Image (cartoon, rainbow, N blue to C red):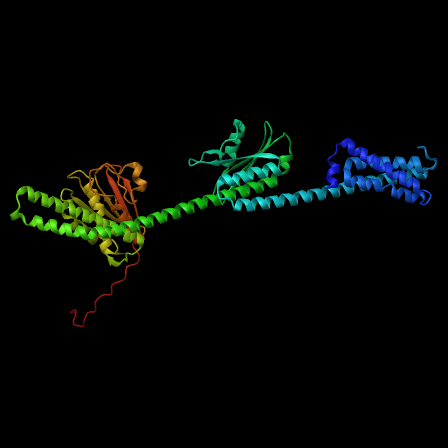
Length: 513
């Protein structure tokens, strides 16, 4: 615009324009002095001051005020063509004229500055809106950072650098380092990031250049730090602090949104993969189960026909039967796991004493626990629990079988049942090597075995089935290593409120019906 083009000139040029405008108005008034009296001439001489203040700024306007009064005195006040004053009244006119000129220049320049500031604020608001819309559509953190760096360079005349934490919560530049940073500044960046709960805590550094360090505060945690450095050593960047704080807030929102999108996508992929795996397991297990049942039946019939077999053939038949039985058991576990994950298992809950379920599990295992004495310790007056007895027997059998499988022969197994804070807590301890510490967090995952090179048979489904059944009952299960050695698996079941049993009626004679 014309106004901006005039202000882009050097100060000397703008002051010369101001003198020229006053001289031009003086020439016009000289042509009109035969038409207007000296009072109207004085009013006309104020117009250059207004023009200069509106177009050239405050400095040239002040100069124009003094030049206008001087020209008015020289050309229009008797004696003309002289700065001498013949009447003291003219001095009052000069003083009023100068005061009015200065006041007009001040008001005009202030109005112009206010209009310029309002225009700049509108432009920045529009730029912030555009940035917010761009960040809302960003599909990667790299794209968001690129947009922020471009915005800061164009709107603030500075260079932006983003620092985010890694998996160990150590701050580093993202997406890549753009240059070395002094130790003082890096320590300040770390201090701003670790600023605790102080919302909006920031820092200004002016060591080898003006810069501003702003935290990226998300809804759940700090997402990083925005470092803005001025291209030159000036304080202009501090004047834009409010805008840069808004940029930091928009950046934090964008990074947090992208973080949650990544989590949601990973969760969706994991869910789809789990569903696909369960479907494959179920399909394969069903296809294998029928021929496996036939194989087990034929092997069992062959082993029973011992009178027609020699010793070597009889041992081979028994080995085939045992391995087919073990394989049949694995397929059953695969089917159970697939049904549990698909939510197709209906719990037939009944109020049961937990000690009867544990006793039935020990009896079902039979030979598997022959070399491992089992000690069951029950707290007094245990409440009844609403459970599916068949599924809960499966949990107890899996835990006891694992304890026996990974314990040396003759090692005892301890089962303890207590009532803790309205829940029934069941612990199964063995005296084996325990769980590898690195696998404790994932020991209940599918196909996870405590020791991958273990010679004990199994595919890593037992504990996964236990977790699915316990959680279906509203309970929790976890594993740990006992301080005195061995593994410990404990699960809890909510006790609930068991129904009250009404006493049986007694006839008047005292005999029960």
